[in-house]
Length: 221
Image 1 (tube, helix red, strand yellow):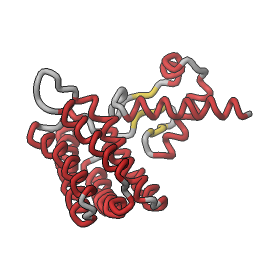
Image 2 (cartoon, helix red, strand yellow):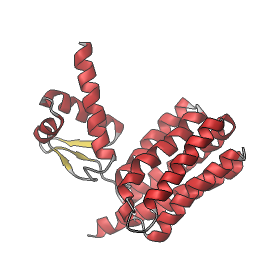
Image 3 (tube, one colour):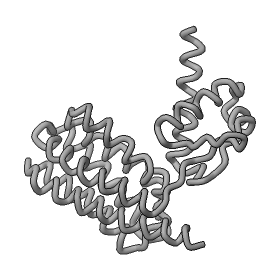
């Protein structure tokens, strides 16, 4: 039983990662057979994984039509970002006094790494920003140590993460986003919760503008 549960858990994690890193964009079909072959497992753990991810809001299961990656309307995205803007800046402020020297160093390394891979030029790798960005935000949430708020935020983060293909960002929006990470680290280093909260708010509003604009274009097409 434990082995079966472990296999199911690994499959959930693997399918979640495929979605979150953008292998399957919003609205993409998730075939059980194709996923099972890709992951080297049977259809049973894949079916269970899709059910769990549907409960998380990452997957939609339509009767007689199978599963697909959840997509969002403009109105739904606006609501998601409103919720995120109410929670994540507050969590960031709570994280600041709890951050030690090692935490500040780790956050700084992540912010600089995002600048390195995201800066325009021949070496730009926009896809590489995604895992770095997730770790940066995840560290701040973990430092805040507010499980209830973190749980509420998780649902609000999924939608933007699935849609957060950094190729969608125009250059100005991308530069702002990368600079926000660096400034948040400066605020954490200065032990200034209000500063960190203000920058995180601006960071989320910047992402909101990009994602809502992209969703509006998709709705019109």
